[in-house]
Image 1 (tube, rainbow, N blue to C red):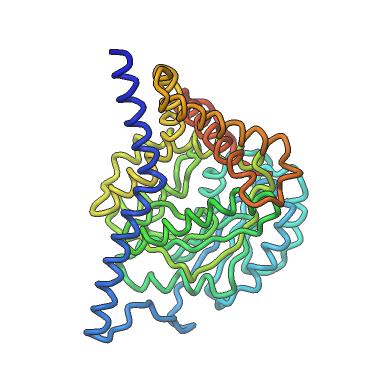
Image 2: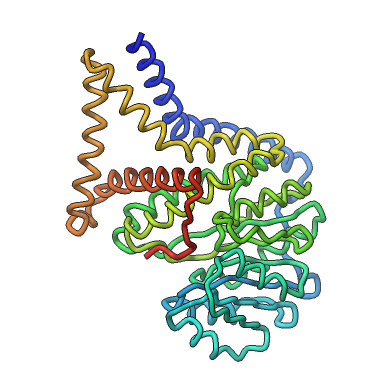
Length: 392
């Protein structure tokens, strides 16, 4: 009986892990291809360009670019210069930056800003990203909010690309496309993962199922934006779900581009993933209540929910495999799991030497990120706190 239960648990968990990583992307690719074929056929028949056209300066809406900054001295001056250089009418752009109890040179850098489009708020005590964003929103005067981070550099035309979609009153939010300035270690770990993730997001967008913006570049209609409560750690996904709850559409524009700086190491990314895991599980009950029509519900289960419980599934595979070692086949599957852990341990121990070897650090990255998510899940369930901060 124990063997049967172990086999059921093992194969159920294996099937879900394989589906999350390979099955869902395959289903997504097939559905994306069919939709693309249908759209191309409609174009051939009607010759109507479905791409959203550029807006003239007179047609552009007023925009407030806002972000919270906590100890952003490394890239903040570059971010300010990047914002000043954006191709957007000066009279239609407001920039609100809230320093959330920064203890480095962030406040000093902000105090030197003289551009009249900027409104700087310096808070002496740290209260969290969402509380800081709420302060920024209180000062926003314009119809469209564009949310960003203190280290994210926009393409000069990124605002124009984002806001062109709001000509349709049905559109409540638009997500931009983010890429990373990677160092040697992050290019072999987070950089590879992000390419995979970006491909999934693009296909989901074509199917009307954009789930999560990059918090570093997305726009929201001001009347549809509700600041998340101060204890929220995943404000971007909750903001998008709230926009959907109100009946608005969410779009993704791959031409609205920005570049950010990832955590310089797997260790730095580990802390960010713990926070994301904590916030995701804390927000899960609310996320489950939001209507997800069409493909969106399927995408949420396949892309988000299964990913969040992946550490549990991997643990089920490992533990159930221990009860099945009487079979040669299961001894082989257990040995493969041990090899993965050994790969991760070698990557961690010799990461300085292996950083130039392609894929050498992938095992270390995968194991570390799942451990981080598991810790985040436990914190989210138990109500433990995880402070907002950038990875290092």
